[in-house]
Image: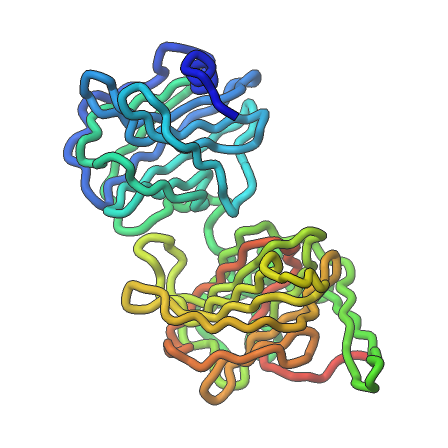
Length: 381
């Protein structure tokens, strides 16, 4: 659908013409400079915008960030010579801005792009269409109040808020007794780490015989709270050792596209962390559309780049609306990946597992439990 100039102008209005914040002297802009805009949306807020502007005759907008609350998305765009470019609206994260609520939007300048976080979580990237070094003005407009902006040079991104600080991965009982490190003490007020929670995380297993006589196990997860995504969890350095497993229990959403698990070093998004294992089942590339089939991607990030990805079209137990139990096991020279106690695939080490201290999970699943424990195939039947 084509939009004429008048309609386009209306589309990009912010409800109020006058800026609620303006800074015409941003100083030298270089990689690592961050602006954090904090404020509160008004009770009737429809939209607001954050604009990084070049002070030329047409006031070109290098970056326009435009949350639209009724539509539940955030537009990113550029305006050059009074013409708006192509909108970007996609994000792996759900929309988290609400009317009458506090918000925090961080914008990090990097050589390649702007990185944008919302309420402490990385939300999206916007690749430069105009030189960011030419930006001189920051304007914030719209139906918001109590606006404050902080300019910093940062060493990592995003700035964590209390609700986005990584949790401690739950340690199985045997590991809690054997790993005596100060930073893994069980906090009895922590929902993920308490004995009460461990008792409530109940997985029942049912033995099922397939048509060809093979034995399979089906999980049923009982009485457990959902863990909010994206999930960042920490484990003690060098704790993912031979014979230990990262256990992830959840339920696949009804219309899944993909989800992924990173076992990595550090929880920042910038600079990019070293990723020992990136495990990414994708459900949208199947020509047959067979339920349970997925393209399973494995890869690592090291030396500043993604490596050669390993890709397999596999029959999995990741079924829409069904629970699953996934175990990533430290074997002799590889990650072995089990789903419902059946070996799915493996991935040879490219990065030492001893460097892993962070687990990152995102995508089209409901997450119920993440734990580090000795691997055993024994189940209750």
